[in-house]
Image 1 (tube, one colour):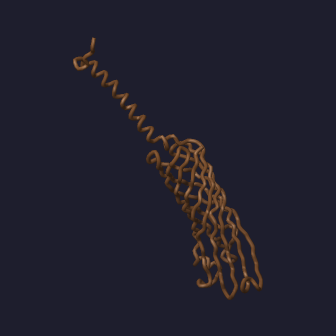
Image 2 (cartoon, rainbow, N blue to C red; image 1 turned 180 degrees about the vertical axis):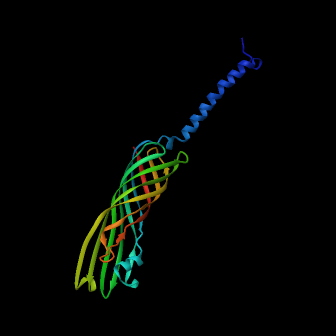
Image 3 (cartoon, one colour; image 1 turned 45 degrees about the vertical axis):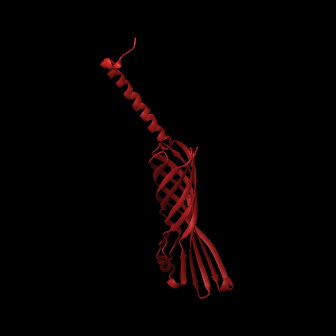
Length: 235
């Protein structure tokens, strides 16, 4: 005997009600597969990065600090820096990370009366941060981070008296450790099940605790910002 659903409104209504949850579940599965990347992103990862660092030192401030005329000095504030990080993603939205950073160095040169003095300031050390992520779709997400940077600030000094140091030369190094905050923001693109790429900007606070002005007692500023490109592998 054949069923005529059209002539059985109660049975037709029940089948429609039963059909709607199945359709909703199928739609949920389809949406879940589209977000499989960020929503299923848990566990440890490793990241290697390289980028361009720019230190906040100002030439005019260094000229005043060293008490030399402006036309006798030059300052190169940029350098290439590297980083290696290990992190753990607790959820699609939160991760914790520990990293070692080498921000590079900045160089200040004084040339006067045939003599040259050089001051190099470099910054490196570990950092810990908490990362917040906002998945946009299955491929792209936005990130923000905040943490602490424990810098080892190294200051190298060299003095050449006379042309090419013919009358004498002096070299020395000092430095100190400092802890400062760090903030960053970036965007992440996934291009494989385990691989992704992050482009970001990070800012690091700090002081060159090992070098003070002999009269004023002020310390050199070692704050720096860095644009970087980072390759990430999720285990």
